[in-house]
Length: 179
Image (tube, rainbow, N blue to C red; front, side, top):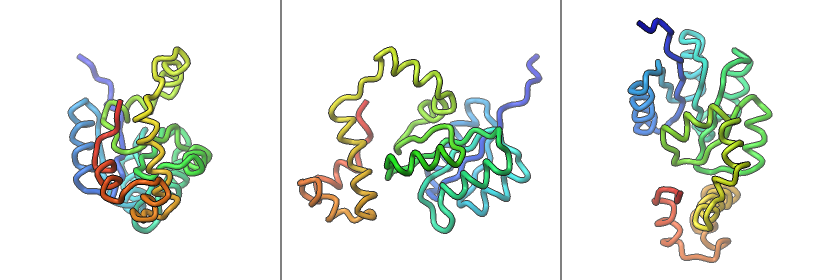
C-alpha cells in the first residue's frame, strides 16, 4: 500500500471555467488541489494548504501574477511555480523567473504541458535533442500574444501592427495552438 502523500498544487486563475477544469484534471491524476480566483485569495489558501506547486495566471484583476509569484516564493522558497498567460512576452517571462517561477507557459496549455513545466530539465533535454523544433504556425501563434500584450489587448491595433484583418486575428486567437 502506497502511503505517500499526494503533491499539493495551488491553481490560481480568474477564469472560473479554466480553474475548475484544471483542478479536476489534476485531481484525477492524483494531486491534491486547492483553487483560488485571485492573488489575495491565493495567499490565504496557500497559508492553510501549504502547496508544493502552484499554477498562476499572469493577468488577473487586482494584484497580478508577478506579484503573486513573489509572495508565494517568499512564503515557501521551495514551492515550484508555473506562470500561465495568454499574453506572453519575453520581459514578463524573465521577470516571472526572476521572482521565483520555474517555468512560463502560453495559454492555452493542457494538463500534461503544465505538469511537464514543473520539470524544466526534462523539457530542456528534449529541446537540446532537437525534438521540439517549432513549426512556422507555432511561432506565429506565439508571436501574436506578444503583440497583443504590447497593444494592451487592443484587437484593432494588434491586427493593424500584424498587417491582418481584425476578424482574422480574432479567429486565430480562438484556435488552439498548433503542435
